[in-house]
Amino acid sequence: EAQWLHIIKSAYPRLYGMTGTPPVSGIKKKYMDEFCPIIYSVKLDDTVGILQKDYEIIVHLLEPSTKQDIPLKSGKFWNEKAKIQFWENKYNKSHEFMDMLKLIQSIQNSKTKIEYLKQLSNKIDNKCLIFLETTEQCDNCFTSFYSYHSKNKASETNLQLFQEGKINQLACVKQLSAGITFKNLNECIILHAYASNNKTHQRLARCLNYVEGEKATIHILCLNNTRDVEWVKKGLA
Image (cartoon, rainbow, N blue to C red):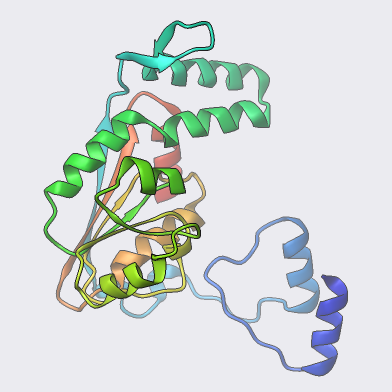
């Protein structure tokens, strides 16, 4: 990658780029500092337009289910609340990445969140963008939704229908988090808010690019009394 950057710099002495999420660590930040250092930056609050937008962020605090409906290899069952508590306790003791991953997955795939999202989406008549976490959720959990993701051959068609206002709801995974503006969009639902405020920022910004004078409403689903509350707070910070 560094070799290619050398070639690009030699071919184009003046090379400029723009991003809303510059890398803050790792090899990408090293390359950026060396080959394309930041020469100008602006804070979100100082950008044109956002402060003129009227919007609200609603965090829906949901209690994890205690229904014994999660099968174990032993043939027994446990509930969503117990599963999340198990992985939280294990991660608190081990601080291992794989344990954190299991905890994230157990919250991202929460049946409580999914069922609540279905009910919430049925009450929304406005144009609404829905952020899910996996393609399986798009295809299996929300079969009534038009979806946009890498495995759906109809993605571009669905996107065009959504852009033209021929459908009111579009479910997506990550591809539409950045780099696209939707006209007349003033509502979105976020199944899972990341502790990374860059990722959360990108998703929130989709709903702030709406027609002047319209109020945007962003719904974030959060499991109460779990690590999810901490993640949402960090994501919104």
